[in-house]
Image (cartoon, rainbow, N blue to C red):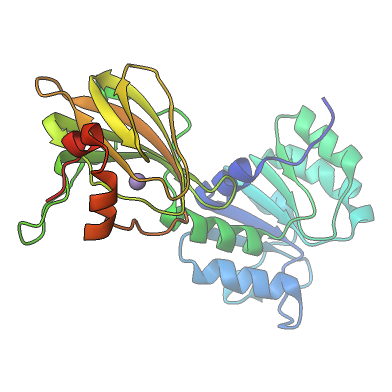
Length: 295
Ligand code: MN
């Protein structure tokens, strides 16, 4: 295997989950990136930081070590501010310390050393700024929920996933007996969100339309749906495409609930509800008129 940059998800995990950092080439000069990055990481209050620089006693109030060899214990990430041609010499110390990750800052790259570190079981990120990646990942994580393996706690329920119950405001419900679970939300890389909806027997979702589309896959029970002016009986593992601006409504069977996965964009517009004219137009088809539940 040749060295390759870890994926965005792997980089996110490194910057968000690491605790103990060694910063090789940390500096007291405020004009240097190594100073600014160290200051940023201190400000996060979630890292244990060890500056490494033989010319300094302290950096930003932290005890400074002259080399990686002086550090003991487990280090998660060694962040490096050195010229690319200085990396092979540093590598010996890195391999001896055996951190989880060797991180070479923006503009620093030495593929041969990266490969040797990889071969010793050390992940290597090259030519990336830890501060930039941390800030990006932190922003993303505030909106993100993306388990690698989301295990069920019981059928159609998942560990760590909260149920959201739709509640009527002022008795003006356009839906009946609907719950939602967000299984995956991720804006930066994919922009997708996967939800699981469950409609109780005799219940229904809101009749609505919007610019964003849905892909819907029933995985539990029975029901039916309206998409624009067409009605469908739903079976498990069917897939329904609800196109942009198509009216849609999902209904569970009278005697059985309906559960379905629904894929949407994270950044999407709010639904539009039908006006009286819209309802009149939709109800021109007797079957559609019979199907629709609205207020
Ligand atoms: Mn919708």
